[in-house]
Amino acid sequence: MAVAYLEIDLRLTPIDPWRDVMAAQMGLLGFEAFVDSPFGFMAYIPQKDFKEKEFLQIELFEIHGLQIEWHTKVITPKNWNRRWEENFSPIRIGERCVVRANFHPPEKADYELVITPKMSFGTGHHETTQMMICFLLDLNFTDKKVLDMGTGTGVLSILAEKRGARSILALDNNPWCVENTNENIGFNHCTKITTKFNDSVPHKNKFDIILANISRNILLQQIPDYAKILVHLGDLLISGFYVEDMGIIQNACEAEGFRFIRNFKKNKWVAAYFTKNEY
Image (cartoon, rainbow, N blue to C red; front, side):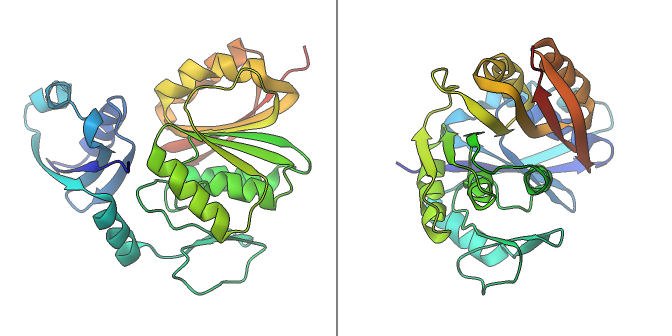
């Protein structure tokens, strides 16, 4: 069954510097996406995962001089589809990649990704997805085995196949995301992507490249598992965390034998590239 999402429209007075702080705190409670608005932002979480008591315990509600107004709305899959079709425009990432929906006309690019998002996040509009795509465009995927944790729309898996990957395992713990990924696989005529409704790291497999655009807490939990299933000198590309989290993420990776290569920053978000040491 498709998952209904809860949209929380937050209005903060004043906005700065509290908007980013509030989003970071809500990210720790399971909110999956944030869209800035003139007065604050909209935040999205599966309706079944929202716990109002925990939400109201965020310390910003007690900040003197900060006013927080919030309203909730249930976004059903049907309404989500219409919302995206009304607001989703094609996006070009550099000179080589364009992401568009199936209802947009084709555009010329080295890599044209047809992504119709439905209830899934990962359209190419979010900074983390854009930075991960930039990494994928630079990395050698030829004949590589790839793991895509939290695949969302499947956008990274699809690009990995177009970049020459031999096989891709795309996992997500949301059945709607798996359904959406399968649909987008069809739009892009991909044949090397296997999807699974699962958020556990597959310990029986080995991979040359791991992609994980999820959240800080999940990354910190799973980085030790990534180290076990990534081949020597394999590549780890991760995002979904804020600039201030880069230190703790890098420390966790280096503790498991990863070597930091470089990172991208866009607004408050970071994407980082590590490789697994040979020893």
